[in-house]
Length: 103
Image (tube, rainbow, N blue to C red; front, side, top):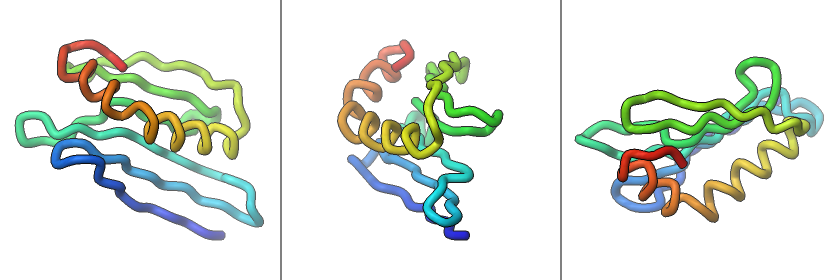
């Protein structure tokens, strides 16, 4: 089994946290989330994971409330989607979050 975990900074107040565990090329677990620093603390903005046994996306607001969206994807495909989506849209998600909305 292989595990990878890393953080990619986008700016002083935005970063991507990435984790995945594989065996023989198959993704067993994953979590990719955008975090924004707000009032000195890192807050989750959008998170892709498989914590409940299925690939889904959680979108958060400033109060910590979130919505869950089932992705109906294999873990491998959801992991690729998560990385690409956050890489491509982190600034939009950050701005919406800081304005009080959800990404």
